[in-house]
Image 1 (cartoon, rainbow, N blue to C red):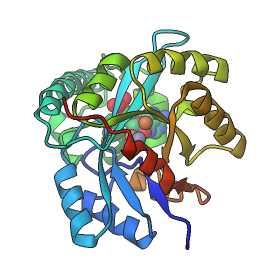
Image 2 (spheres, rainbow, N blue to C red):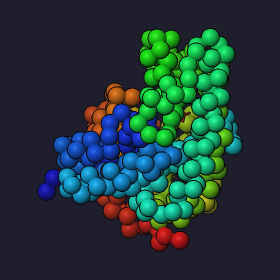
Image 3 (spheres, protein in one colour):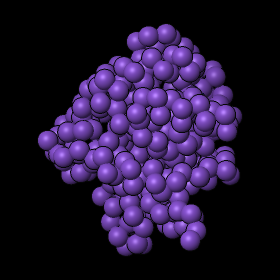
Length: 288
Ligand code: AMP
Ligand code: FE
Ligand code: FE
Ligand code: ZN
């Protein structure tokens, strides 16, 4: 029998991707994936359409989310945690996410003000028009600055204006890792450390981070990811084994916002075994 593969990390236009939740399911079917999770940033908005599309197209779909916290040690990178397999209708999530979104709204209007102050007039309404949902990230600021003709592409927007430390950048104030992990468990999901190689931490520092997050109940870690080299994959698998973390992984597909990343296969060679999802599924906690 053919080997079965899954994609446990993807984004729709409900956060900073460019395709609809249903289109993700259709793509998953075309790629013959055995299951797919939608993990939009800070929102469950796309999940009703996504789960319904799974039934319609006969593709197993998994409710997911991606949330950020800050790691206080070293250079304080923003760490991403993916939640998988929770009950997307659990009321405990809704209020929690409403608070995160309120914080984003506040930050967005302050960043718009900063852009106006440096001579790039723009409005919150214009920003909202660049998105398909309530979660508006700096990716949308990039699109807006491009549409306005202030920059030639998104990279220039990040380099000159909205990248970390740039004149119109504001850091987000974020919940703690412990808080996010507990929230995911309360909804009946498993908590996964996303793309550990993207934080500019070496493997010694990641070892410390895993130890700390395991004490909060972290369940898994992304051992398969679009940008990993074979050596990085092996190193993350070793980290998983050492800390008793279950391997997970995905493409981090964002549609046209990351044009070099394809669903399921990443940059061409990604293969996330179905067994990852079976093992994670067997570890889903009861809803509290
Ligand atoms: P935020 O959560 O609002 O800080 O924004 C995060 C979004 O900005 C994600 O979609 C990232 O992929 C995108 N992003 C962050 N840095 C860059 C960059 N240098 N170039 C392009 N996109 C970026
Ligand atoms: Fe993203
Ligand atoms: Fe991420
Ligand atoms: Zn992601």
